[in-house]
Image (cartoon, rainbow, N blue to C red; front, top):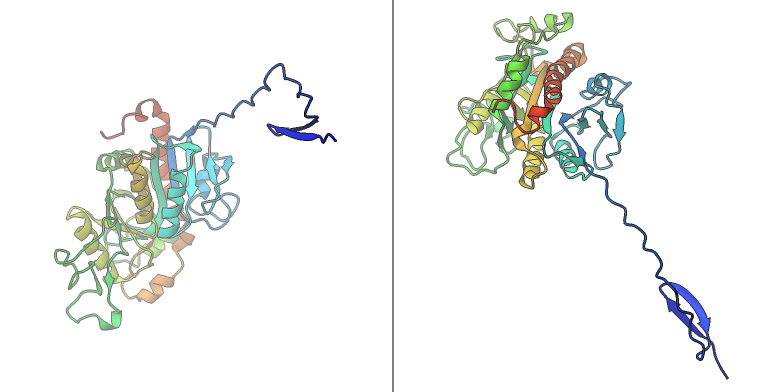
Length: 362
């Protein structure tokens, strides 16, 4: 009795008798052509915003709102590892909104930096957001270009009710025995991020005469700071450094700590002007991405604008000042961040034939 044999060849089955050979094929089946991966999109400038009240456009303005609408960032790109979609235009401007806080900023920037859709190797990065301004140096609506970003979380903190009477505050360096005693302590290497000072100087020179808009609301509010010459000025553009922490700190003694801490970590020429909750996370991610050539740290700019003050005016309590509404909802600072920052962004894009390979200021 003869039984049929089933032959399986390259996924095709056929029945044959043992005495009957399978028919030979005259030519091999054609191979399916491999799909070539799309070339990465070259990015000229990345604008980094942090918080948004709702959608990226057509809603209550946050830090991303004006960029999306005024620079026509109409190309929406899905970004499941981030908090918001990415936005881009045909000029090479890419916008990310990281979400608020150090951890959101760090994880969102790392995700973008590793995204294979983009070539970020020549991109300039502009962090543009609002902040708490030091009334010793700035007024509401003032825009400050940073040369240093300092982390304000990596330290020891003593309960305020147990601070020794001869200490100015209960914050001290890791491993230290008292405030500002950095020599006896230990540290980590993610506290201080020096930025490209020449690039910051270039951005400041380009924008220092920009007419930052004043408004009745912030003009009235700043008059409470009698005795603080910088705080009562109309808004202006300056150079000043960024202190980033997850804690939303406030008060005169905390403001003293911020000034001391920035100098302690970044050097005597550093000057705290703007407090925020993201910049150290952003710089941590960018530094790691620079190790593998994904980004160029020499192309990073940080611009912060004062939406509120970091301490109360004379005669007001820190509790009142911490919880008070931002004058005009912070809108003048949002405008300043866009107007001052966009002037630099457009200069970089318009001069791309040069700035692709030559960093301004160098």
